Image (cartoon, rainbow, N blue to C red; front, side, top):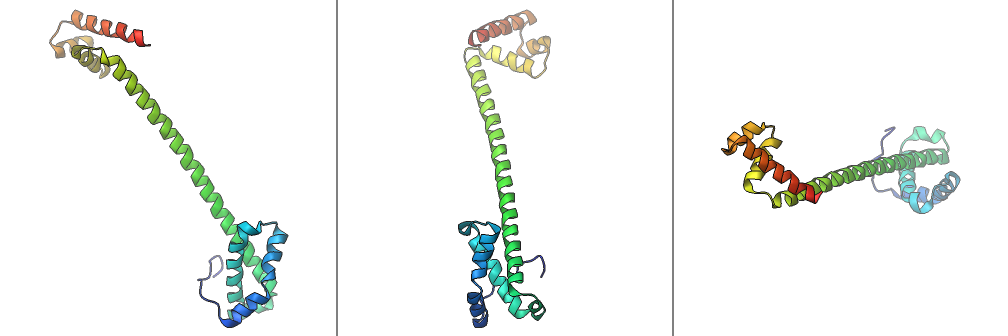
Length: 169
């Protein structure tokens, strides 16, 4: 079971009495290691109770002092809790950074769309269609042909659109 938590099962009467007799080890451990009791007591006590169960059910552990087994279990439990907390904090930071990036991208895209909407609000349907065709990569001649107008007229319409847009910028 090394490296894994033992399943949580109710303590027997003998295990409860043993845990009560050695309960001060939890506070001694937390004090000695400088862990905040309010933050780490729950983690330490769960590891302590698992150590009680293992110590009383696995005779090979009795060659060690119970305090050694308990301190090691509490240290492992708190270290695992700390690592899990660090992983959660890192994941939260990455999530928040991604949210900010997406939020900024969405905000920029929305602003760009509003500007285009404002710019095109004064454009004629012919000017909007020509601008769209040119933005899609059509040549002036191809755009004019698609609209069924002469190239000079298409050029004039787009020039007028650019001039009206310059007033907004």
